[in-house]
Length: 366
Ligand SMILES: Cc1ncc(COP(=O)(O)O)c(C=O)c1O
Image 1 (cartoon, rainbow, N blue to C red):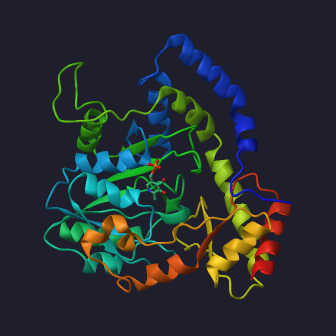
Image 2: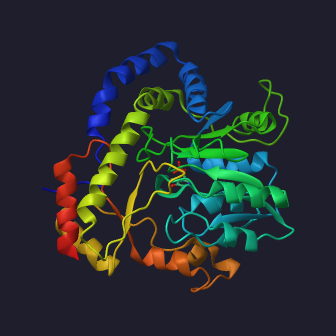
């Protein structure tokens, strides 16, 4: 039996009727740009995140970029970013002509290490971007205390953690502003690119509204230099339909993760994910550490199991950031994780049998 990394057929079947009807209505109405469904989704998703405001944009990358612009990050500023994340977390800083300052991660959650964050603060530090990697919130209490002490803004990168909670509070409500991606493979995914900025801060909200729409307030009154980054109404139809299922799908992911953990327990050289007791993990990604990772990946693929690596190279070692002058050895925890990490297939409707096949394939690969 071959197992894909992700299979959303069952999710699609569940929302098909609602999406067909929703598309029909949009086509009839013709409100393709910032239409009714887009506004409904902004309201529904921000409520889901337990915050006041939501601004739908073109992608998670744009959400991060516009959030930093709303905070007035600019040339000469520094923004602290964990080195173990997708490159968009740092690119948004570069887009503002500011400097990403990379820091190491915690060895158990793979999230930003608050001590490394604090050590990297300079007079130029304006913001920090904790990423809730794989679906588990970062150590937010410590991050908030440090950030507040130094007057640093907190931009949550929640692209991988729709719906997870930290001490009972939803991600998206834990900093000054938060950014989500609805890229198709995310736990809440559109049928194309989409993203959202959420915040409780009215000023950030109002600026983000302008930034995503050419900086305008009236039709041809442009207050600031904005761009064109608006959530498509058609994508919002899909997202509205999926949002109703998100909590259930997250529970299904958590059950799958628990079954993986049970089956992989006897494999002493495999490190399965831990979930800290004060937070939930929504397992957008089920990442394990294995020895001889590259050979294991090949062997898994040869057995028909779709596996991926999130992420094989830390951002500090990426060619795109060569000008910053980092070198191997700068962030030992991230570098070790990048060497050993591998993501197993994970999607809500995975069957027990599929999980058993993956676990057996991993045992054999080792
Ligand atoms: C942690 C993280 N940040 C940002 C992004 C960027 O989101 P998008 O692909 O929607 O631009 C992604 C996903 O792709 C991500 O995983």
